[in-house]
Image 1 (spheres, rainbow, N blue to C red):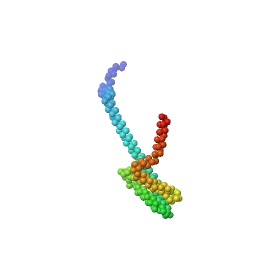
Image 2 (image 1 turned 30 degrees about the vertical axis):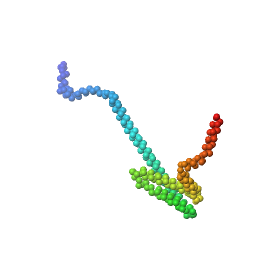
Image 3 (image 1 turned 90 degrees about the horizontal axis):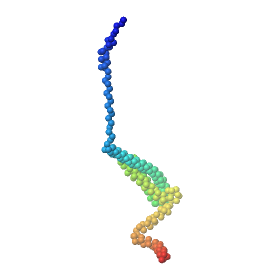
Amino acid sequence: MPSKFDESDFVDRDLEAAHESAAPPPEPEPLPEETSPPPSPEELTERVSETQHKLAELKQMQDELERERTEIEEARKRRSELSTGREEMVQHLTRGIGLLEEAELSSGRTAEQLSRTVADLRTSLDKINLINEEEWTEENWSVELTKALTTIENSRMEWNGARIKWPLLDGETDLAPSVAATTQPLQTTERAGLAQLSFWQLSKLGLAFTWPLVLVGLAVVILLVLSRS
């Protein structure tokens, strides 16, 4: 008959002690999360002020960019006008000088007038040819561009004046100066004569031209008064 045994005889007490010592410590309980209080009225006011300041800075930056964009666009437009106007006037002036010089050889009494016109056109052409954009710098290009555009505009006025005076430049075969060009000195003299008159002399001239109208108006007023009475 088997003998009774105690189960504790098969338990290794040292092994149990080692397991107990190697067991991880219990995890600490998580601390409750700290909740921040809502912002105070002073903090909200400060945030609004900071936001407004940032908006003002952004608005100023936007205005500066808009102004810079406008300046760049205007500069681009003016440079385009210079390029187009320069090419146009060089062609017109070169062609006009050639036509007038050819006509000058076969002209009689108009040779002196032709010579003056050719000299003026050649001067305008020389001024245009002196425009050198490669010599412009970052500091002076805007001023130089204005000067160049002024030169182009003056040359265009000189060319238009020559066209009025010499129909040959517009393809007509008549070499004589136009009627407008020949009558212009007379009109200028008449305007100069009126400009030399005093105020009282001009008043007398005005009264001499308008007194019949004054008499007619006065007669109409008298008739209206008599008809109502």
